[in-house]
Length: 414
Image (cartoon, rainbow, N blue to C red; front, side):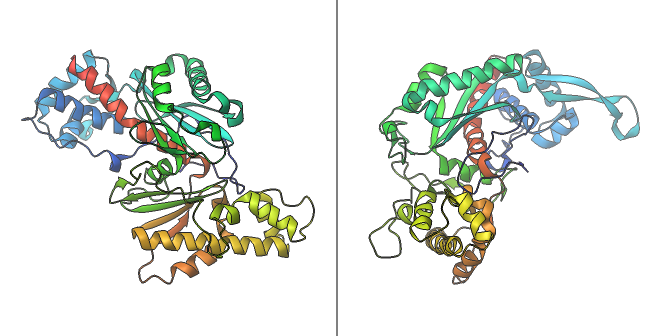
């Protein structure tokens, strides 16, 4: 599992470490092909399996794809000539007898993809080889690039790629998660909670023009849901999932029967503006976000300077501060109500608490379990294991189809 943890304040930690490999097999099922399929389709079937594996023999590939051994032999020769695959002698003999079988590896350096997590406080960038292995990452405070976002993202990404030198192949595509709604048709941003100047920004077209490759942009909550289903996520392979991200903002990512729920205008899951349950006309953001909780702590006579954000509030609650504990309990009741309503609405198999407060799940789980027990068949509920890596991982998953398209173009010329 990815080791990075979230900050209880909803703050931002470091980017993904190099060498981490992101795979989402259940999100991109292997082609079911045979010797009757066209040559290009069969080449892509071999590449699909080679991208997932470390090294395989021709016999392995025949078994995995269902292709006849002579067909595999012939197609591998084309992939070797096209420099998409490399061959190396094995150190073992098949069955313990005879010469070692040749092993084949996908050349991960032929292309690369990137992910960008544009958070309210920190922007993170990761570049991965075309088999999903992270080869570099960097982060920068978002306020430094917020005023001119597209050029700032491009500069950050291009600087990282330049530092990687030959390790990064041509950029096949980029997946971006951002703290704003994203119109799926135009790629324009809408209703950003903090950086209001982004409203209406055609970020996708601006980035595609500057980078010269396709770009997919999603609300960050949506990408975190994709990430939680990956091999490094909290619930790999789950078909129905709701992730509630609770930190500097409150948002939900939903996957139902394997499909990501975006909404007609890409705004699904922006729930910070939901009415609070106290009947005073306030919203969830007014009641539950770290700034509101810190202000309430001061207003209720909390010790001066002890609580400035969610992290320090949780620290004081654990230390026995009665004002902090009462506020955390109030927050737990509020977020538990959110979980309950989403559970009733979507009937997911699993629910995950992400965002900064997930690191303080022990202060929330009792209320969450109590509220969810009202359901006849409550979903499994746990804290995210991904922390601040979730959106970057989701971005790499969202960008992976660009690699498949890039490879299809290469294969068509073989």
